[in-house]
Length: 258
Image (cartoon, rainbow, N blue to C red):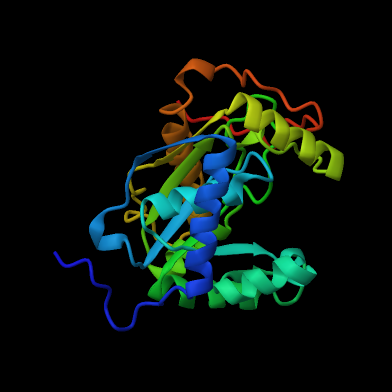
């Protein structure tokens, strides 16, 4: 099968491709990056949703480096606050990423924009909706946005699990703590692992049936948890490295079905 994308496929801006390379070099300077799993050839240019766990402010850089390794250029759904930042916002817009204004009248418009984007490209989302605060650092209960996006676009969902980025930049990213974290990483060189899992089957779910979005969300979190388990086998009970700046909150702990 040819790897050449169809004419209607979104073309990643050169600026975004350059940022991916920059992220790859940055991660190489701070840590060891191990990428496992892959995305099926037929899905590499979309339509596709990549659903990633969220454990650290360093996640976007680690995932950008990992997608560079796998030669995938996803568009990222991110909070509107990032787009309003003077430099970061310009970079996000120039890269073709997707703005989500939560708790505003425009959030519904963002879903339609995301649906259109998924139909012509690869879009990366964080189904948990925030950096997880459960002390065990397993994925939390997800929000239904990822499921609704999958239903509306018809795109498959591939879980992307990451582990180790929490050792680079702390949750409370003050200037002093960031510098300390980067210096510690250069010295200790932690291992950041990213794994692309198997596509999650949602084909038997009818979006018109009440509760379908919640059931699909549970499957996404289950798939993400299984994918993460494969790369943190020696830390199943909890992380060896504990970020002292991160608050503990178990209110959204996901309890797996047995």
